[in-house]
Length: 340
Image (cartoon, rainbow, N blue to C red; front, side):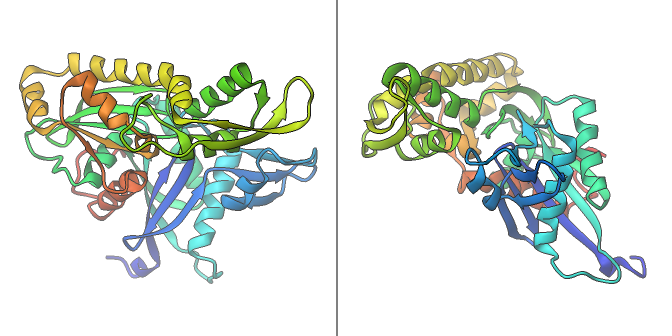
C-alpha cells in the first residue's frame, strides 16, 4: 500500500453498446444509455446518457447524437473517451487538488480483435485510468450469475446484449470455446423498424422500436401470459402524415424470428464444439441466460425447445455482467482470466 493509495479509486465498467453501467464501492452508481450529444460547430459535449437519449432522433443540424459503440466495440474513439470521462464525473463530481488515480476493470465481447481491445484500453486511459484490465463478457456474466467459474465443471452462458450475443462454455476459470455473433438487441430493433415499414407502411425510429420490443416483444407466436397490444405512432409512408396503428406480440415474434434463429444456430454450433466431458456437465447444469436481450418474452422457452436443455434466467439479467465485473475488480490480482 503506497502513501497515496487512498487516492486510488476502483471502478468496474460494463461498457455496452446500449447501456453503460459503472460500479463503485459495490454499488451501481451510473446506469446510462451509451450515447452522447455533441454540438456540431464547436465539438462541445452537450449531454451524455439519458439526456442525450432524449435528444436521439429529434436533433437539428447543429446537434448530433452519437452512439460510440457499435456491435460491442468502439466505433467512435473520441466520443467513447468523452462518454467514459463524463460518466466518471457523475461519480466524482467534486474537483479535488489530487484527481483520483483510477483502477478499472472493463468488460469486452469475447470475439473482439487485439486492435479493438487496445481501443477500449486507450479510451479508458485517455479518460483518466492509471491501470486497466479487461474481462470477457461471458466470463463476467457467469461470475455475476453466481457460477463458481474456477471449478472443473462446464457451464454454458449466453449473454445477449445490445450489439453482440456471446455464447461461451466456461470451466477452470477460462473460456473453453465461445461464439460471438453480432446479432442482438439492436438487430431486434432494426427488424421491428423493417417490419413496420413493409407490413404497415409506417416509419418508426429506433426509440419507438425499442419501446415496441419492451412492451410487446416476443420470440414465440403463442405465449401463456401475452402482453397487451401496443399502440405505435409513426409517419405514414404514403401520405407523410403521422398516424397510429396497433400491433400485437405475435406480429413482433414473426418480425424477430430470423434474428432469433441465428442466435439459436450459434448456440447449437457452440454445443457441437464442446468437449464431451463438458457437454455431460452442461446436460446437468443447463444453460444460463444474461443480458438485456435475454429478457425477450418466451426466449428461454424457445431455446429449451431447440436444445432440450434446462434454461436458467439470471437474476436481474441487465446487470449480471456489471455485477461480475465488480466482483472481478475486487479480486483484481487473483483471477487468472483478467486480460492485462
